[in-house]
Image 1: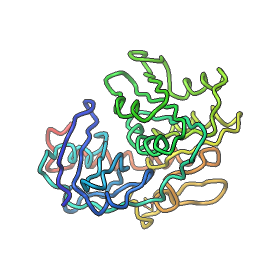
Image 2: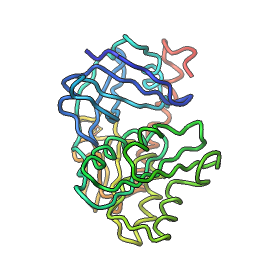
Image 3: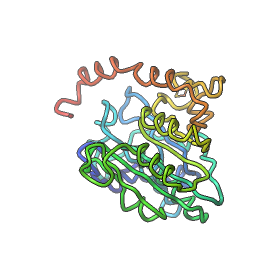
Image 4: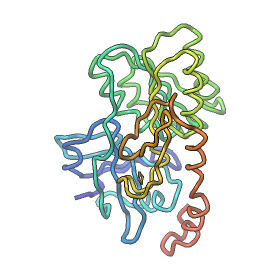
Amino acid sequence: MNEILEKTVLTPVTKKIVVNAPYVARKAQPGQFIILRVRENGERIPLTIADYDREKGTITLVFQEVGLTTRLLGRLEVNDSILDLVGPLGVPAELPEKGTVVAVGGGVGVAPILPKCKEMHKRGVKVISIIGARSKDLLILEEEMSACSDELHICTDDGSRGFHGFVSDKLKELIENGVQMDEVIAVGPIPMMRATCEVTRPYKIKTWVSMNPIMVDGTGMCGACRVTVGGETKFCCVDGPMFDGHLIDWQEAWRRVNMYRDEEKVANERCPNCGGVR
Ligand code: FES
């Protein structure tokens, strides 16, 4: 169990792995995540299930190597096993049955948005996707997103591919050009989701965001993922990860994202087994 069956390098810092996890695959739904550990005494990290195949009993994970554990995970190869993996966790995304949805994915946030687009596309919802990255080398899952979108817009911050600007700028352009949409789903870094919400707020377009970036243990025990939604405290891992973005206290969420920067730096420097991992 938990063997890596396929591994693809998507960008210099992003990898996709297909993992043998039949129990998770059997129940997984869009919006849910798993928790894994790569080594004994290692930290537990949450990763969104980017895809699942109930028949083959596999799940797909896409991750960016930003910290020690994701770097160690990135060193595992086909036939290696992940030490342990539990899920599916979190509340499945509430997806519409009809209408038009704009799916906005930034950076590695394109991975969590993919299963939602697939499901909506299957239901007959019109899916307009906007995916972006800092530059063209960091764009991921373009083909997969194209297959489940009625329209796909590509953006890069540096203009090296597609629209020159942020995904939220592209969304603004679509709205200003009169494109009708019933709701927006945005997944990516906190500043990107926040900017997307600020674009849709004046138009009162319902906007869902995924607060995965602030999760730590993912089981409701550590309390690190507290987020204020409409003045109420919610736990992202138990009550989410999807929330109405117009109700989120973004300043608090941003403080939370930066809370463990120093510890992450120390872990990277002190790890006895990660020499040379970059
Ligand atoms: S991530 Fe620890 S309580 Fe939610």
